[in-house]
Length: 285
Image (tube, rainbow, N blue to C red; front, side, top):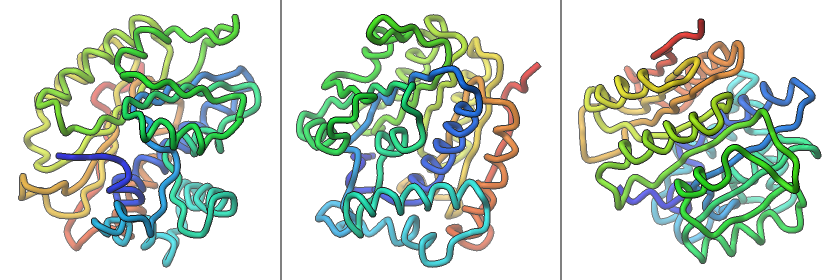
């Protein structure tokens, strides 16, 4: 489905993904122990909404730009918009932060971030976007392979007991991307069982995701949560009608923040009759 980040920066999927990513970071940083974050499909880090790729699709009009014009009152969405404002203050008035920039914004001096990007052109842009931030390492490599190489995390001799993995694949070249992602998650959980692991996925027809839900519920995690936003009825397999996040080992009470945020985004971005969903595939014990 050709999901290169630059073409879809600031769309409704970004709004959901990045709002909840920041909520996860805030939940994790509530405790003092240092964190490690791995972004497996990091992209370029920062995007220009007036650039060629973003203007070609115009998808930000139905996502970030609509939120900026009429900001919802939900605190998690407000947090996302504040992070966008911080990025724009540093990078220009039409800048849209990707997940690496948001991780760097939300995490602390004692935390560490590894960002993987296979495309050399985007990796070069990513290195420029993170600059000389000593917390951030950029790897020009396959993100799934990096999960095997970098987990459990150890940076400069320091081991990290806590942290998160964000898997945000393009779903374009691999017809079996769900199977590949789930296999990587199984291995990641075996290597770092306490990690919060997040998988973004597109929704065309929600009914087609039933095998994925069953496989996700069977993963060896303490909990499995799905949070989804449909901005159009899921009656067409030819377009992305919504998206979701699978969150494994979600922090305490994260589901409550996720539910209210997804509902707020539905009200702000969705067509009449569309929906949001935040449900446990496996509730925590």
